Image 1 (cartoon, rainbow, N blue to C red):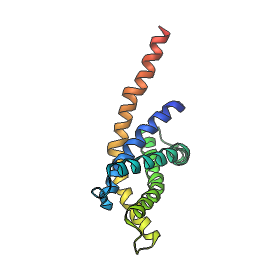
Image 2: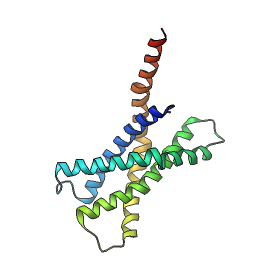
Image 3: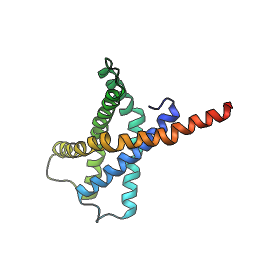
Image 4: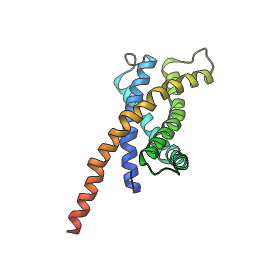
Length: 165
């Protein structure tokens, strides 16, 4: 959907903001930290999560997810299959890495548990994946694509038409 580096940056910012916002609130709810932390602590956790997610999206998970998805959909002409494959690969990669951040954040706010770190990680990953995948495919993906095409892509075309005329 984005065709330039600038558009990829804008699309990534919007997508990361939406996904990290919802997933941060979800994880605060799961961990029972909504009433225990201050507003500033919540905003700082969101901001740190957003920065980590954006860096992962732009430099690690995003490029690799697109490569894998394009290989998986090489024999199809339907763009929706490619978009769906990219979304699924992105969610799997982001959930994998952001669950590490979520687990670390949980340990910071609630302390260590008696479970193993590996067991805690897989519990966090599973809980994040079952919310992030439908959130991305059903809500955030279509919403961000709509916002992107309506306000960012259309502005680029309108500006280009005005300059040429």
